[in-house]
Length: 158
Length: 158
DNA sequence: AAAACATTGACAGTAAACTGTCAAATGGAC
DNA sequence: GTCCATTTGACAGTTTACTGTCAATGTTTT
Image 1 (cartoon, each protein chain N blue to C red):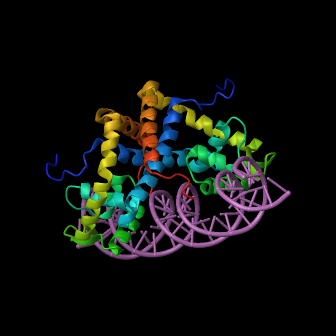
Image 2: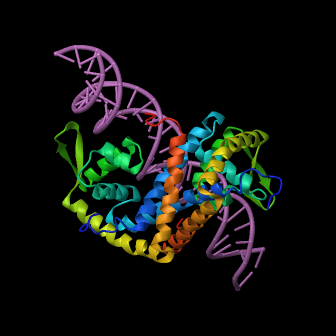
Image 3: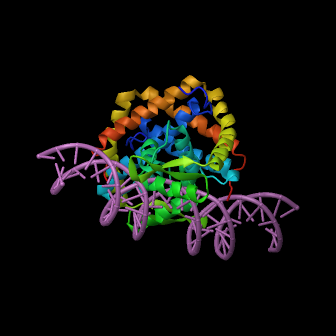
């Protein structure tokens, strides 16, 4: 199109980045609406998913690592979930402070309901786009992220 | 892996969704660091990009639509940018309240500097992954987003 | 022209992420 | 066993995004 404003506007990388931002927003809004009736939000649902997904139980800091978020962000959500009775803290045999986050029976029930709401959507995605393409896409994104993270010099900024 | 907790954890759609969340976070953190020395953040930089990208000038609400964000979110960023002297408001011949957002010379200078910082990163992405794959990926994400947005029944919730 | 509707900016309040800092707890180095 | 670095949770403050509401402006319908 433009033949003089040749800043990297039409760069394929830019189109992808913008689309990641847009899709991220859409996913969060969709999720918020999907699980609202269960008293969940996208963020709380994600934390429950992270707990459920793990083999075994973990303290908050470990969950945060798995999700790629800051400890403090996840801590606040977990505290909210605990206040709502969806998770509780179990003593950690190997660390007095870092208590283990576990779902309560109520938490498991709610999470199962959320999973049921989500399943048809996930199926529709795979049906539209064929699972292989989804996997390819996820891999491409992961490769970009790995590159990006290794570029930003220092980890553990805290 | 798990042969009894057969919730759609290993669903390809889920892996993609999680990766979108992670990459979104990484991109924002990377961008924040990249343009920090220019007095910008990822959010401000994105708004400047949205202004620069458009053919012509637009009021805030139009920029928000283009970015897939709420009017109010973009308004706040634009006000910040105006306070920093990077954008200003031009009268809109066709609408007395909806003033047009334009970059100041200083804003253009800063945005150009940000573009220079970003260019090698974008090139590296395209070099790693080949531009066609980037485009394919962006298309796949867009298709998912369109589907998702048409699923959530009503637009214009406001 | 008047009434109904839609768009826009402004203002208020909430949610979710971040950074920075501190003290407690753990794990190693010596 | 003592020191030292790392990990962890807690607390405080900031940024960015959201929703909801209102008044002002524009647009459409009648």
